Image 1 (cartoon, each protein chain N blue to C red):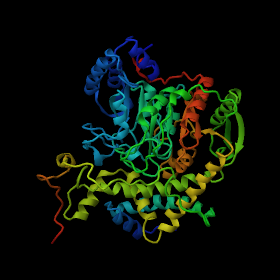
Image 2 (spheres, rainbow over the protein chains, first blue to last red):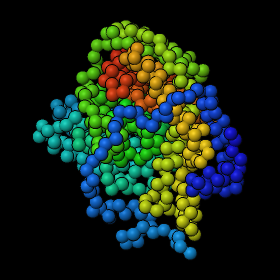
Image 3 (cartoon, rainbow over the protein chains, first blue to last red):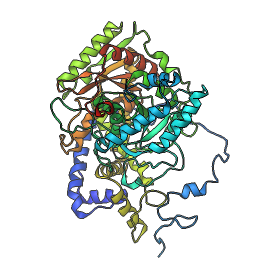
Image 4 (cartoon, rainbow over the protein chains, first blue to last red):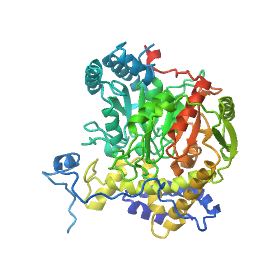
Amino acid sequence: MSLDPATVRRIARLARIGIDESDVPALQGELNGILGWVEQLNEVDVEGVPPMVGTGHAALRTRPDVVTDGNCRDAVLSNAPDGVGPFYTVPKVVE
Amino acid sequence: MSLTELTIADAASGLRARKFSAVELVRAHTDAIAALNPRLNAYITTTADEALKAAQQADDVLAKGEARALTGIPLGIKDLFCTNGVRTTAASNILKNFVPPYESTVTANLLRDGAVFVGKTNLDEFAMGSANITSAFGPVENPWKRNGDEAALVPGGSSGGSAAAVAAGLAMGATGTDTGGSIRQPAAYCGIVGLKPTYGRCSRFGTIAYASSLDQAGPMARSVRDCAIMLQSMAGFDERDSTSVNCDVPDYSAAIGRSLKGLKVGIPAEYRAEGLSAEIAAAWQQGIEWLKAAGCEIVDVSLPHTKYGLATYYIVAPAECSSNLARYDGLRFGERVPGDTLDAMYEATRRAGFGPEVRRRIMMGTYVLSAGYYDAYYLKAQKVRTLIRRDFTEAFGKVDVLLTPTAPTPAFAQGEQSDDPVQMYLNDIFTVPASMAGMPAMSVPVGLGATGLPLGLQLIGRPFDEETLLATGSALESAAGFTHRPAIRAEAAK
């Protein structure tokens, strides 16, 4: 599988990473290089092999549904890049 | 002996015997950082004032006879661990002003045991790299030099700042994190010991995430025993990490020097790969002889899916990275670049905030998870991962531990490797499979190569059997008698 320029632009858009038109050829080359290299996995027969989704040592745990943390609004907001009072801010999203 | 040349074990005894104070010990390291960090760039942030205050408190604790395992010991902390009130950058512009309001579990454990943090060590941006050249705060220089050659070498990565700091005497030990080799490969390049514990042994809470199914914290130090001492403190169950495993933490130091008589050591045929340098092949053979002499039985084993480890890694890790790094949106924390719309703000923020390697991995991960490609890439890689793990499980039915090289070559010079990302990825060919399988693994320096650079061997163990790694590693360490130190270090700079 080989990526065309439109696909490179689509991936960047999905990833919310801004790119210039002049970035596309280099990104296309690099991503195709990596994808071409991982094609080697097609040699491996995985018929009937389950996907590995964890190492199997940690069983998922449950805990009582109670509040364990909180009352730390200022700490949570302390790194907000453009906070106003007790709020985060975003550009206007409703026209 | 100079205070910056001591092991953690000897320094802890010296502090208890009042041969020197914690303030003297810590000051020796903060002075060394002031002298050498401008050149090595091993630290992104130094915390000398806080460290000296903590050292005074450590002296009070020592005077009362209440010292804990690491009381007064100066450590470097990889700048991927959140430290309460101390800037934590992940070596990325997007977090260049991020000050966590909380402490990671691993660093909290070290503080509980009395450790003194002298600074936050440099790394590849978000731990994505094998040479510590993707840091937004500049590359780290390896304190080692080739014989008769002043070229600046890379320290390996991603925990390159930690490895360089420990090798040069700018810390007695340091924390690292390892996703595909990021503790072991820099340890090998810098002539120190680095241990990646079993996945689930150390909590990931408060460690900035790269690839969550692989990331694991571990110790880096100048001796196997020092790694045991640090791991003792770092390891343990944590409710705040859903993948933390609730099993007892054994007495790791007790494994040091344990008899290896009858221990079965596997030598995987597939690690005699193309590109393995002759000097590393020779060091591997020497390691085999040493372990034989220590009473081990050497057994040839096969890990047939080894060659697919890297390709599997470069699907799974970018996929997880694209998901984890979605949180850097310029909204709640981190840097923001304004935009007219919300999407424009996201795109401008993430373009400016992330470096090229991070952007490349996010895009790669986004693609392999996207509709229509998920099964072909991500699901396929997860299945191959099962086969890689199965190889190890079968090998550990026959042997107790595996011995391999840590990396195919010694450290290389900055700019010496090609710009092709795939070529750079090949540095991790021997470390990635154990990461994919979640097995514990350790790199131990065993000698110098033809050009005077350190060479490391890797031991891979059964899940939660770090003790066998430490026992076998200490045998290699004693047999090798590795006492070489790099040209650039605190003691030599005086």
